[in-house]
Length: 593
Image 1: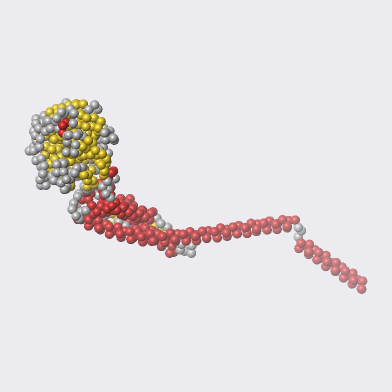
Image 2: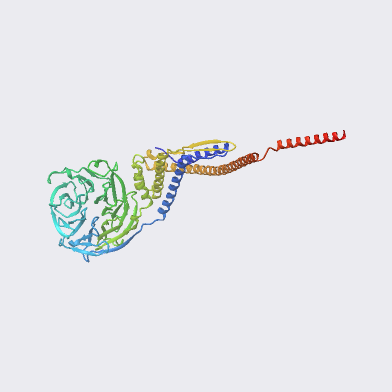
């Protein structure tokens, strides 16, 4: 589906040609609706170029903005292993660790509002809030899982059944089931209201270090193990707790050379990430639909996030799904899920201390802050991530591309821009290609509305009259819909930029023609105004003469009506004189004779 790179230029040129023909025959100028469409296309292209320049400058000069807001002193003696943040309960943060001590913190003041010590000496290895924030699950090294009621912070239920330490746990989307992973190599699904075991999933050959429920598909469970495998399970297929269950699929990449420490689904269920050694793997279905038991065979690896440390200990999504946080020996990192670029690096411990590690980090409900815990810190750190509130230019462009219909812009093109890669696939190159795709998309949408053509017509009157018309379709740039590889996409980008430059050149010519058209139109208006004034004056003079003639005729009639006929009187007077003279002569003659 080609889009017209020079739609605006072609339309404007057509309008100019029409105006010129009209003015050449006399004095006339005009433009049709096509000229307006052309000008709009030109303006759109200009806006795209401006946005690109601004984006490039921002990418070059911008820096990650993150700072430590404060620390949560968990305990003076015991290490902190885990933390949890509630997305639906106001100001509910929890930290826990060795010694079984659980502390509840106020998110605004960073003050400890409650200390729970119901686990005696058992260490809390993992904790997580239910989706509605009404319950908290804590996994312990005494082989049990405790369910806390958040309203009064009392123990609601204790789940027993594992044969060794419980490393991890996660809630289902409806908050009725809990999946747990243990050092006994087993995965268990519990029905929380009565504490019963729904099923036991066996298949891992080493300790299970991470489990997660798909948030949209309540039947899909992922489990990660130190046997270097991630298994996907359909817990809805199990009808009895003791019924054996086989995994739907096992994700075993050749790069899984280390134990897998954790796994996490994105809030929309479209992505799965897990950490294996220094690499975090990201998977998605080929169609882009949410991950489910129906498309589990279509999942494919879309990104590998390389870390400089030996192991990544945890990975988790932000509530808005745009960020992933990973923790290693000394730092926590925040990654953007659209282009998989690192947007923040948080130094959580002293690099010179070989005995430290960042165990876990969790985003707050607004995705703009992060709580990290580790050992032997004995404190939790709270980080403000201002960068997460202001997405970088590439992220903004990728969001625009993702919103386009797949029939217009295939999703694979966005994937090519999103997936990380070595040079020459640098962030600057990806930003340039994404900008060109956005420009193409804008021109394509404009082309659909205006059909890429413009027309203009002009007509004038005076010594002569004429009319003209013109149309332009604009230069057609190649469509990116046929592109399959990053190399081809970069080549298409260069072709698009060349077509855009040609379009701008044609647009400049059309603007010059339009300025000439404007001048001719002004001259025509002035001449027409002069002629109109002269016609009005002649019309007034004619009317005045007609009025004067009427008045004279009327006066003549009045004079003739009141005064006798002078011609008759003169003739009569003359005849009288002649008669008198004749009489006098006759009398003289008579006297002489």
